[in-house]
Image (tube, rainbow, N blue to C red; front, side, top):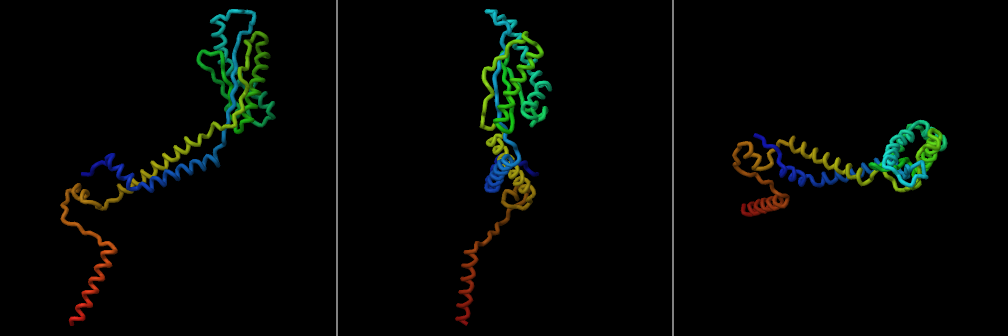
Length: 245
């Protein structure tokens, strides 16, 4: 009856094919890095922070309901920013080098829980493009609010301007190299395991006993040195026999 491979058997298998597995892991890392360098576009991020404030500056006390209203307004502002009215104007300001769909996919608006502050960010293929997109979104967004709501709209304050970050945010070289190495490792282990399972040759006494057979004797293979010494001994015996004759 065949036994299922145990964890110890897997460790022995990994040790047996160490060089092959290590080589496959290294190749996986190298291929993943080459793929990223040749086929994956680098992405850069720019971000700005905005704050929704009270429209009536004459009030010295800020009511809780007013704060909650401003917090809830951010959801409306998200829809306005991602709408065609804003994005089409942003695209026109940038020279129509992008499409509205591209801008919508690149721009994101995030808000912390129960906060009047929110962030506008853009991820583009160059840090300059990302910064320009965020700056134009803020400008067009503020103008759109004034056109739609007039002076009744809550004030929008830019807490931090669009950042310029020359450090790429994607792809993550280390993470993708790690994934490539893991794929190479698992692939080579799988190949080694299949190769061992398909190999039905008897390689040890344990293989015989597990099949219910009896071990009678061992046939040892002579080394090259032993073969050479035996050949010299036989030739010497033949020479001495001829001399006696």
